[in-house]
Image (cartoon, rainbow, N blue to C red; front, side, top):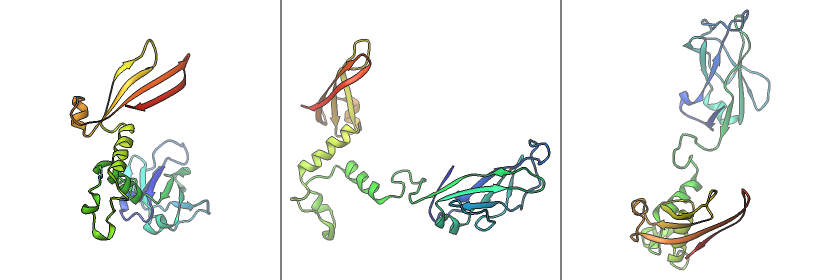
Length: 219
């Protein structure tokens, strides 16, 4: 399935593909279908020519056609097909149109994810108010060092700049370990006293192979 952001402006990212074979034997590649008109169904509606361009040959019976930008702005689920007198019925790429951008490596084009990323990577502290524009400044009564520290712990418990050692495991899963959270990847790599923010003790018990209790306690 192809995932496309709604109203995708890049033509190449709206391409759907077809493998066309001979109508008689069912396996010989059909090489003369360039310019043929595929069809689409939007959200389960009937098949229609509108909303998709004609076939472009790639080679060896493989073709693509491009959905229109307007089609991607409207549909949430798009199915594609092609059939001519020379070919067997060919189901093309299925398409789902979504609100996020699957090509955005950091935020998927979603503002909320961007805000969370800022919080976790910048390690905001009580001085955030002076760094923010006046219209959006946060007072220290709202944003405190304690809350900044809480974000550090959340990031660490999500395995951001963490080092785990003193692991106890006797012929099975670990039953205890020390988990240390650092202020940077470099300090986590050396895992000494420098940059150490928090230390946790992990404890787990099992009945056979089944985990029955688990705790992670901050020192």
